[in-house]
Length: 241
Image (cartoon, rainbow, N blue to C red; front, top):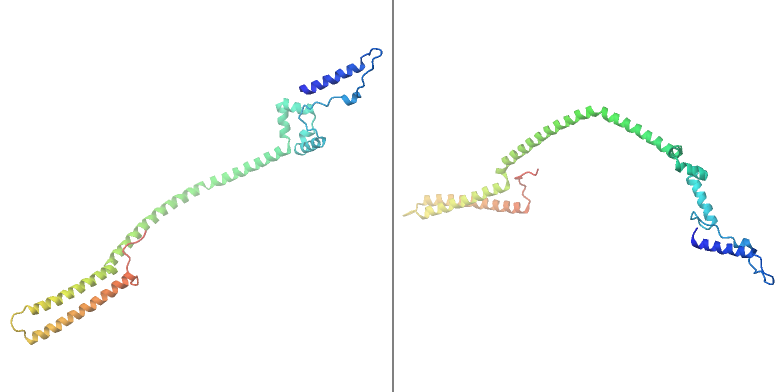
């Protein structure tokens, strides 16, 4: 009981006492309100709401969510709190707890069954794992051999790559040009009179060398232009792994 309720209760009690005290003659009794109107309000020791409708809603909710506790008396609830074995027996008897334990048992049984299946396949899985490891080693050796063969193939193709062929063609052009220049220098370096046969032979050889040179130079120029433009197919020099 708080202090405000105590003070009010004391004031009401004092009023009641004065109401029934004998009064002196000639002295009028003070008019006081009826006793029922001065009864103190009940003390709320459970922090209950003042609205009765709200209390009824709370009680209905309690009965709906905890029917086994809502239907028990205060003494029964105190016994449940006082005796641990009684409380445990009550909890074990709840439908939700029994359902949970049934599900737990079924899940445990299923887990044990799956564990037995896995254990029965352990030996077979070990053999398969060993077999896979051997196959992986064999595949790795084949892959290494494959790369070696591909590299050998590329090495064989290198002399026929566009860059090598263009270099050879350019060397051939330079050699033809050098031969024609040497032939002309040889003729110009002769002393005395040059015979007609020598002139005819020089002209024939020189024309042949220069024709070959210009033909080779033209092919080299066209091939280099095509190679730069990407229209000349070539042999790859390396392999991506």
